[in-house]
Length: 414
Image (tube, rainbow, N blue to C red; front, side):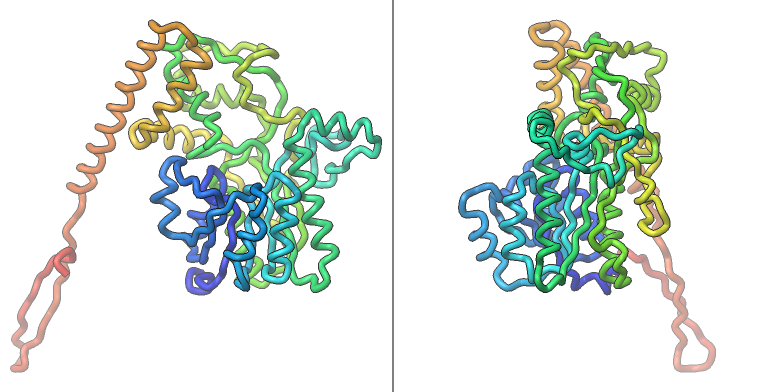
């Protein structure tokens, strides 16, 4: 696959954050030629060394007045197999991009959200399907929903702009795929939501603040690694297999499980093996710590994506929780700046002026982080010791008779 895809050119808007970063790494692993367009912020976790050296970069703020002209100059007459857009929150920036790229691309993958259903007509089912993104015709209701969820409104406007533009394109030489995501879980979450909850639970004995939830609503979640793999699958299916199944498709993608935030927090507690600590989870509709879920309409119907035609294969939620916890456990030692940021965030949100509790919390986190660093070093040393020197046996025949000279050499000396 790598040989075939090495010439495939992908233009990525974003690509240095939570979802985009993971996707770019996955695409790079499959030898795609990546050009990334963003504001030049490479400060999140290790994006500066994990991604930046391996992609072409165009530094543009898509929301600046001269962004379109900058993009036109930077792109020139380059053609791309696909655009993957993680950063469009306004229909105008997509319109500007399409004015430039309309006849220079074949596929436009737009990363949308389940928040679009928040500004649509109510549904009779518990789960929202792709067909439920119907706005109300009543102007007052339209405005009420727009004000209630401006994020969902803007993302749906982007979708509408993309669909309208594609339908009117004269050459009809490109298509779109719209992926609607629920709340995303996984490593390097730039929203800080997961690590906040995990740190709160891990150091509950120090913090002594009960967990609070604002709803019992069951909602959907999706694993960032699954998103990255699926985008890669869509591109491979479209360009390597010459398939048209994804042309102009809208897909909900999520884990198969829908859970309440209470259940998600309980999974974290179980996975951290802290059930014996008896961490209370209290319902408080007015809590200030209200990260999950970000929607009020419930979970997603993913039956379309799960079909054999679209082949969405999500990771089980319990495994998502386990892998995410393990990554953040390692992050305590790997990412001291991000760890410090989370400590300050918990101090402001939970501990406020309680300096005694903060001192104990800080001491315990630092101890845990030190143990994490030492454990990693021990593991690295053990791995070095386990390396076996592979010895090859080579027979070298002499020119006379059957006399043989045996030579031995180490691979690391080659």
